Image (cartoon, rainbow, N blue to C red; front, side):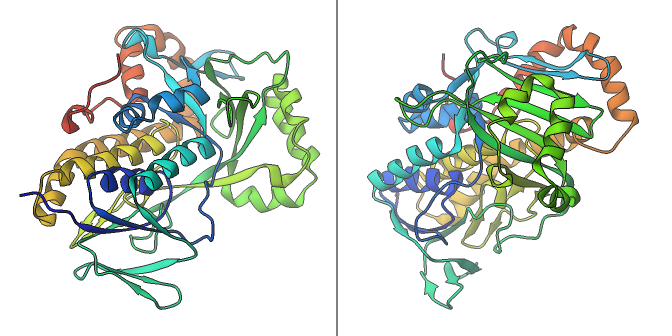
Length: 400
């Protein structure tokens, strides 16, 4: 017989908010903890793939997201050394009508926050969670306050979560991100994520990211690859030094760079690769980046968090025992997580590294291979997140 559980969720990112909305809708008593006095998004634009969009569809949020996002039909990247395409993914190679969605992180955050509130989840702000009683189902905050016990505790605190193991691998490269108004007369494709590379040491990208509200102008997200150990030097140097290098790599971005007049407009994201060995520990379960963190090369971060949230709610549905539900959750999600962690780990050095041989081979082999069957549908399926059939495992269907 199904039960209504008491559930404590640490973290109000995409995974935490989605889990709160889905579980509260099922009648569970959900409490969300956020370290800030007012919960808010961290980061710039992101890509929703068909996997994440299917979860939003099941939550009744897909149409709202699509109304404010930008459909992305293609991912296209060119090496400036050879002028050849070294990334070319067309979603329609897999299925007619398939596409990704560029969206501002703040838009997705607001949609999920409203859904969690409407479902009856309770938010406790200004509470920084530092530890969890895995057997007892408790959470302890920075002031020493204890919360719970809960039937289930969810760690959605992200890659730096104090409730999960330290990242196994700090990646050498991160990126600078900025969401900017789409300039008039821009040469960029409004239906494509475009990138330029110099070996794998330099990379710039432009991604359509929709609008903040129906009346707002269209936007794009600009990103620039940077070694983490060079970030302090970037901050200390005049901004013109970086702009000169960025324009040299991709002259067409000059109009975008004119909009950036201060270092503070660029958010630095440090990437880590880690899969927490024990995603379930007693009454504690880790989801999203607290379980599996990786570089954004395959654009899966937000989508994996949404899949985790839906998978957890699906596993709890109709279940009377937490332990049985968590075993079911791992059966649903663990294989897909392992598969994409492996593929992201393999792809990252090809586009972000100090390597010489790998990008040299990429520049000379990728262009002809990208056009040969079965590369087009395989790459589209990889980026769309469908390898491992994650939707089928949760009873979800791709949108048609």
